[in-house]
Image 1 (cartoon, one colour):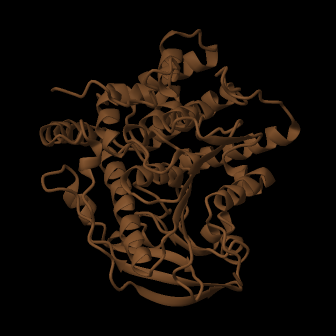
Image 2 (cartoon, rainbow, N blue to C red; image 1 turned 180 degrees about the horizontal axis):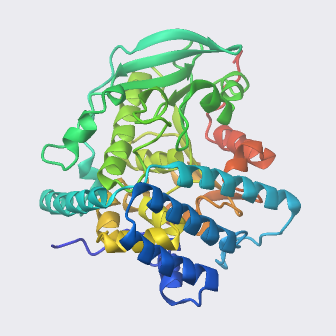
Length: 441
């Protein structure tokens, strides 16, 4: 197969000279002297899996390998010389423990793919690569994203939750994967996902500036999402109209028992379709905003939302400001980075091709598209102690975005909401971009 020469795979930083987190992780697994416990864990895991390939045995081996690996890597420091120095403190340690606890909860409770699942995924990725290469989407990722029809008349319903008033926006998404794409019928079979939703705080003057807040992975409930972005402050103090779209397979659109289940789980066509639909839905909302007469629109995304912010900033014109917070930029890299040795061995046994998956996800990679937002209005923030989205991965996006203003705070992935420096940074960014219009003006 003829793959493009410049492939953004596993968080690679073209021309930067840095090694991606996934490449470092792979190198560690292959060449470093392992602790006796890690070496024994991997050897026993491989042998036991061959003898007892049952869901219970697989989960037990996975969980054990996960905790051994994470305990060994606890409190690793960023190793890039370009990052600010990280000063250790009890506060930082607590924030990193919070990250590790959240990662452990997600990783150990997630559904583990079976051998048959992995074979299906491998076949889908191979077929999709052939199709995408033939249609030119790998060479030109922007061409993969069709322009959606304008959103004319969404449904609005006033809602109150625990004293917080907002509006619930609903409309038929209308998104469909391209004809012939592997996994198309499975994706269209998620009935709850067909209806797009968003949480809205708007003034009587809909022509005021709008900010589109894009939530992290596994969020999507109204109160939690509005709180994460301090939406009431954006609405009242800065005078903005606020809309918080719900991502595919999240919140009221979920298809599993948890918000986000099925989106980032090693099922790469689901990941691709989910991010593509998120972009589609937001672009439809954006068409509705502009139809209200507003001439100023900004994006503010966190984690998964940060990734989506960067994608939208490359596809849409006339965006006034883009703020990407603790952005996750490469999902194959993250999977490899966080997966314990046991999971790596299982994936290799099933024939998982990491390079092929990374190449496929190029069409939704923030590192494969050039930004259209003016350089002076691009902003980023990230935690030096982040245990979920490695700082070196954020640094790759920072370079791709041509080194815009960035805030590095001494915290983790989940602590951003409680960092006063982040709140000031976001407010100042919006004010510099001319977005702030306090009520009464």
